[in-house]
Amino acid sequence: MTRKALLLLIAVAFAALAPVARCSEQVDVALDKNKKLRSGPGVFSYDNDDKGPTHWGALKPEFQECSDGTHQSPINVLVDSSDPPKDPKPSINLERSVVSFAASSNNFQFNCHSEFANCSSIVWNKTTYSMLQVHAHCPSEHHLGGKPLPLEVHFVHKSADNKLLVFGVFFEMGDEMNPHFETLLDSAGDMDTKVVDLSKFNEKDSTICTYDGSLTTPPCSEGVRWVLSTKPMKASMRQIGEFHEMLGERTNNRPIQPITDRKVKCWPNLGTENPLLKKIFK
Ligand SMILES: [Zn+2]
Image: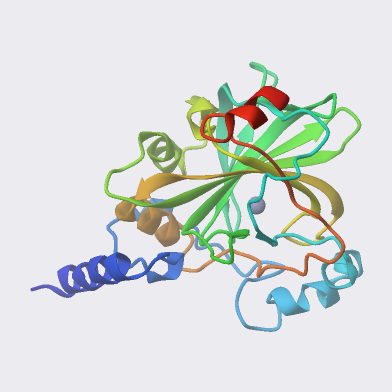
């Protein structure tokens, strides 16, 4: 048995045993070498070094909120829809969008091009937020019920008055490859603009939670509205491994931050919950 096959076998056995497979446990998946994000050292890192998350606030004066902020992200989310927000559920309009790939040392990203067609949008609290870009973290940044998931995709949106809203979607390990995540993986490294159907990343029957947080990378600016879809989608081990490989086999998740005085509020999933709630929150 080759080393590669042995490692894959160990990974499969581990994934079967572990309730939540971590990104860093995915190993040795074949990938086109051109897609690896192996750029030079960045301003900050996710490693346990002097540029790592515990030092972000001291790296530059403008990063101070990373250490001094009190409404930081990510956090551990307890999904509880018994006290839903008074505002209506956000209208999530992920749609076919024209995007192009952009890489950094710690992530891959697809920027939306509104000059060609409308970008996806989210309406929350009577404000429309237009999508700027989509990127991913491995393993997830937010935890659900105390546990990380293998992958979290962030759709970053901005309002006309420059307020940020990030829509987060989680992925867990499944048996089959996810064709929609595959489209993003396939497009990584290709600088041409292309049309990607983002609507498939919005699970219609998911419980949606919201809270007030921050950017999860320096400068860790606060005042970011988070909207999280808590029903994980599925991607295959090969796909999550491929993304991990693109990151240079590193992780890119900021550790969870204290929740402080904040409340995470969740709108009930109207598809499966109590019919009385369904009536009230229609
Ligand atoms: Zn992010």
